[in-house]
Image 1: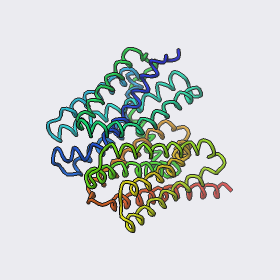
Image 2 (image 1 turned 45 degrees about the horizontal axis):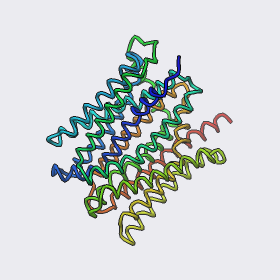
Image 3 (image 1 turned 90 degrees about the vertical axis):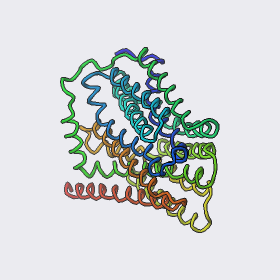
Image 4 (image 1 turned 135 degrees about the vertical axis):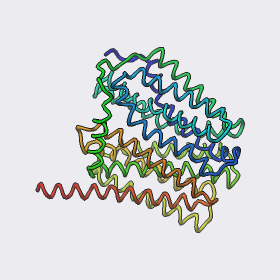
Length: 399
């Protein structure tokens, strides 16, 4: 198939970035919604947790839908749904309407997250698509890095509704570019949705601890990032009276260290056995959370003492992100596509639980955050250890 032109690739990049952008730009707005609607932090936190849960479900169905109806109509429908949800949320007169709009927004954004990779694979094939997807990964990192800062400026100088206005505008731009420039890349349609086969693959993967262990490690490490994003804006803005811009600047620094961890793995990770690298990452995350808890208990807390352990977690957690995903996907090579989709769903589901836990446990102190971080890091290590035991037993049986 003919290569996509630069405008079509730009449209895909825009669609791919909508989901991460909407989540990260909205995170510092949660305390403002809590204040404006006079609702509990647990209720306000559902803007994030229910969105994660929605994405977890939708990532499992967009693939089969695009196999049946084509990539182009499905990604157009999803991006249009993102715009509609953003508009509803921005004009919401009640918190219930706001949450419903946010869920529609999240459901729509999932189309770009899932189908961008699929479209690139359709056009460029297995080998050449790696280079194109590398550019998308860069966008995936930099969009969350800049979004909280942009959201903080809007919150401090306009209102939280302006955030959804920006999302609507960016979604409309992406939708227009997709409609004008993106061709259909999937010509061999299937006669049925194939959901039964897809869920059969998911069942086989969930029964395999060689897959479940690395996938859970990945999901729990990612949950530590979600926990800090759910807790720190509340502590800075609501408890200490800081600004959303302050949070955005610190979060940009955190993302820079996350990029550094990924770069270190790509540059030098091959020098260390994959399993040792993953265990080092997990132990480092657990140690960072424990040290952070001890520090705030002994010396008190401010913005720096909240963010420094979170930055250490981002750096150390990022070291394992690529190798642990590779290990999970390679557990059953014949189901690699299903393994990747299921892992994304697990990540979002566990992230939703972690975020909502923070919503219910906010007490004006950082202790619930550090307890959740310790629990997630410990769970990641336990999950990976179970997979390691299975591999050792299998190797012993072969020997």
